[in-house]
Image (cartoon, helix red, strand yellow):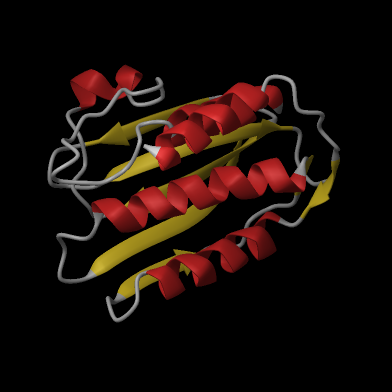
Length: 171
């Protein structure tokens, strides 16, 4: 219950919190968060591949939260796999950078993809996967504050890919 309250408070503060825009090395950010995720997984083998990521301009602390939430989710939803694989990458598309986090985990029914980013919208039971149901809503709010978009693709038992855009390019 305490974690839920903390997550809801964090979510509500995002709309009022000031942003400090500065250059952000997204590759370094992803590597730092990936190292933290690996440590929290203990003895479990989690392969996290990080392709070269373009820098951007934004609030580093908020973008770190986006990367953290997405990588933690990927690690969580691959716990049923003998060999968990997570891939972080980016591509340029229509004047914006599309970053992505892809995993080989539980996936989800694509018919419900629009529900993923709502508060308390869960596609898996808490018995299957822990969490408060607020993490992806936080991701969406942060990305929108950076004037970007967020979406996901997935298939049940075939993994998921979460995408987010940030306008412009290099910081």
